[in-house]
Length: 127
Image (cartoon, rainbow, N blue to C red; front, side):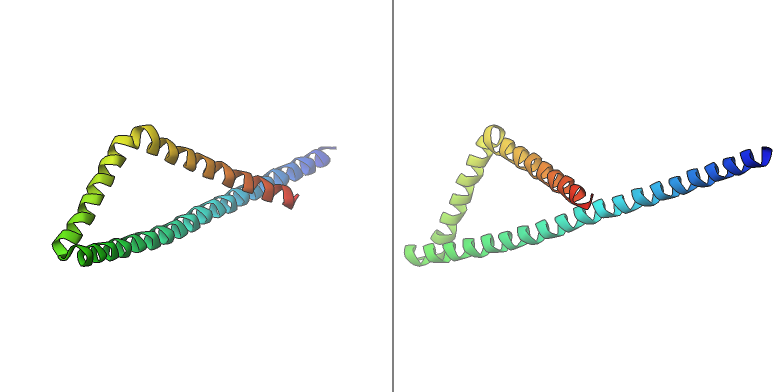
């Protein structure tokens, strides 16, 4: 009877150890998945932002050259573009608290929860 109890305790100990090892491995894989998704999201967002910045800069330069051609001098063309940016900066500065920050916050929260919903759907499909 004593041997049976020892064997049962040894089996229980091995099962608990196996469960903990499996749980640690699952947690490690889960973290690797999360980190890789975050990294991939950051890289793709950085690439998109970089492309938009380049397009914006070339568009600005093109507008300045066009206005320079229309107005007759480079100084007036680039000066008009600078004034446009100053006006845009003032508009953003005075509307940021009421409109812009709220829109960015809502976009970020919506994007986060959409990714969470996608994860839940993926897990349901696995089952």
